[in-house]
Amino acid sequence: MKQKINKRLLVPGLAVLPSMAWAGDMSGADTAWIMASTALVLFMTLPGLALFYGGLVRSKNVLSVLMQCFAIAAVASILWLVAGYSLAFGEGNDWIGDLSKAMMAGVGRETLSGSIPESLFMMFQMTFAVITPALVIGGFAERMKFSAMLLFSALWLMLVYVPVTHWVWGGGWLQDMGLYDFAGGTVVHITAGVAAMVAALVLGPRRGFPDTAMPPHNMTMTVAGAGMLWVGWFGFNGGSALAADGNAAMAILVTHIAAAAGILVWSLMEWVRFGKPSVLGAVTGMVAGLGTITPASGFVGPGGGLLIGLIAGFVCFNATLYVKRVLKIDDSLDVSPVHGVGGIIGTLMAGIFSATSLGVFSGYGFADGIHSMGGQLYVQAVGVVAVGLFTAVLTWVILKVVDALTGLRVSADQEQEGLDLVLHEERGYDLH
Image 1 (tube, one colour):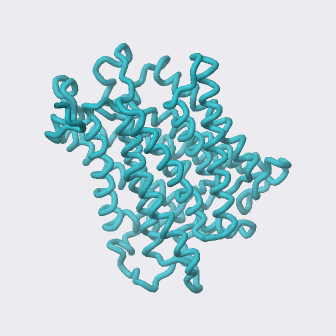
Image 2: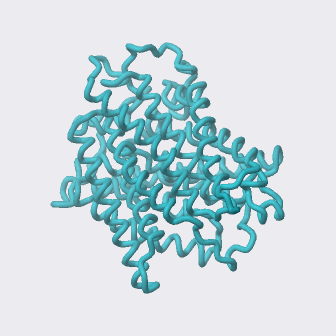
Image 3: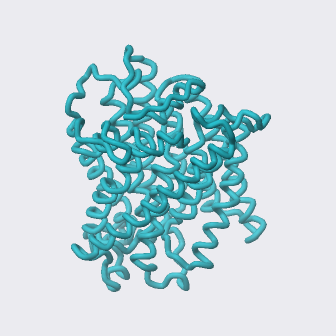
């Protein structure tokens, strides 16, 4: 395996090189922090994302979304144990890992990855493998069969998420180039955003879109889920330092600042354009800020985090309007313009605000062997294009295969009745 170590940023370097087991003793402090971070990242999906998405759909589909999040958590966890972790972080080659750690072969209680047990590192990474396909369901919410969703999510995890993880974090070719992706701008947000866009295009819009209003059925639920996402993101980004130290603390700080900036800009944009700031806009701006800072969170300072959050709010707001109103693409829960566009922006901005020459907006330096902003930006752009194209093509192929095997979409009558009753024979609310 080819390894690159940034001597100036040892711990963020480890976040970029998480698969490498370093000789040394286990750190109780680091282990405790990553255990807490693992719980925080799982908390982002269950119940955070489940409630966030559940409130955004119509009441007749709320249970279907909650069920999808729970089912994906189960399927992704088992696949990660059986082969996903090994293929992502096994030695392998530039493109994919090997099966040397399938079913955690050779990994015991004393096996370390850096200063933490490898079993904990595997579990931390599992929570990322859980939330990424769960994000994708926002692109096809309220219209995909449950069986199709399960098969698609399983295939997508193994054929898209796992290889990209290896490229970026597991010793692959993008890591070797020096790509900066601290906590998942390419691995999580670009893959999820592109996949959601492709799924929305392949399945087509919901019945009545765009002429029929489809407002969220329970904004209280959505806001509660959004709060859980914000708190959980501290584990998502701060935990990616893989140590309890100043690098983790700075990642948490810039994450929080970017979320706050995203809220303010999105709300201001709505206030100016529509006359009132909405609660939905505020929580969406928060997610835009969080998703956009994610790849840069270990490499930029507070000033850079502030600018990235401001840019995220402005660009993602306009991208959402463009996708819905101009392109008329029914990405049901705005995954592509928020996570996808945010991931692209954040990945590119990491190449700018990691520079040490920007005064109060300076970061902590470029990757080893890269000596200019242009050089780092080039690597970041290669990562964005490669991951985006790979995800788009493979997602389309997987959807077509699943369609041939099970069919993708419920019937028009079933969609009208709602997925809760049609697929699960249950209601989200007692209407009597």
